[in-house]
Image 1 (cartoon, helix red, strand yellow):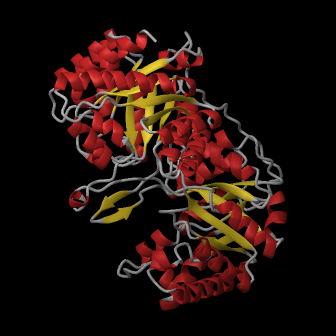
Image 2 (cartoon, rainbow, N blue to C red):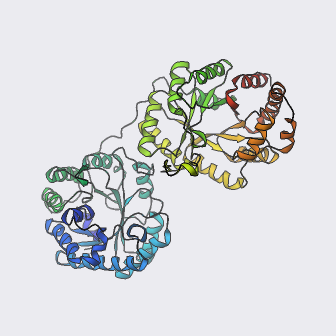
Length: 589
């Protein structure tokens, strides 16, 4: 079958799940189903035939997880599994004149293994390729170009796994993915599979399809049977095949040209779908276009005072307060109240700094906003939350009218605690910033102002600046720098000012004692203090040290003014009165 020609006048119906169906049929087989290509080829052949007899006109090779990482095997064994899987699929498809697609699942960032897999399929004569269940389009574009260079007539599909709210596990939105893939001339079809059931994928298809030209770029949807439950330790899908087929009929009516099933689907799901589609030519299908849902915006305009002040060109002052280590927040709230009275524009709150548990920064931010009418900037790390928890937190912040967040990857968990506490790190600060930007565009009453960290003390500042540019592209509009003390740091600050198209708040941390200076210079990552400054504190009592801290902080603030849009003061040991003294001096500048 020549797939592109077939799609001009037909809907192409794929098979359903291999992995979950194999596990259901052969529950005693505990190895991954790809091994069955070699160990039990008759089982794989039986499943292919069941789907083809049900009405599928395209089948996938049993190779989704055929890679060294997934199967924990050698590259030679992967090669044998792919060859056997290809042979079985072709043998099954031949009597039905059905198309065979080389099925490739996501790998870690390993281009060499991807190309080895593709080379194997190409050598076998594969012309149809399916990249399915991907969480990012990053590897797909180069792989599609690689195939087309060696096989120009190849038909390439890229399918992404998205949650019901339209985001992948890496935080990429369905809209962004479809936009980028739509522009790739090497990819012939794209859409969604896995994770979500037919109802939610129908809604996503209606939202993302309108810009597609069905004759040049085809849309594909292969939903799960529904949403699973656990019965006796096994994952079970209870979705009705009749309901599944009716939803596939709706997908076809909406303009989807390629249909099939993913986890939990069985031959009966495909048989029912084939009956709904009637297996006949459909010509150009009608488009049921649903207007894109737009978040309800605040009718009075943006209420983000920090963003408004930055846009007006006025200098802003943000002050960081450490969250308490216990539930007694009285001192924290009193400190914030004093800072507001002193005229600060925002209070930033660290998110469990140095991976030590503190009161949650976002909950404190909501309390400051609600009770004191302060504009908070809660820090949000990638260390402790997956994408679901992150989105839930962002929605809560939006509901509490907290409009600013600072995204950071997060300090690593101390080695001694790693057996008990596991970091999540589903994404880094760049990906998190992009996720928040996309979420702001689709599901927030008002967009977040996304802040990022800039380490002006980085040894390789060129690399740090390149990362900052990626953050800027991802939606970061304000950078808060590490404390600036050294000549190198000032030079880097100037360089950032000349390079970045964002606001920059220069970091200042008052040094309160000689011991404090030694500790920060020797033990705190990202802080460089010149020896001559450390020496100035030697032998000073508390009052004299604080006076020196005010003088140095004001001098640093004055020097960084040409390269910044404001200041970011870090309160040492909850000494809010020290910050107040610095603020009074800054007012006179």
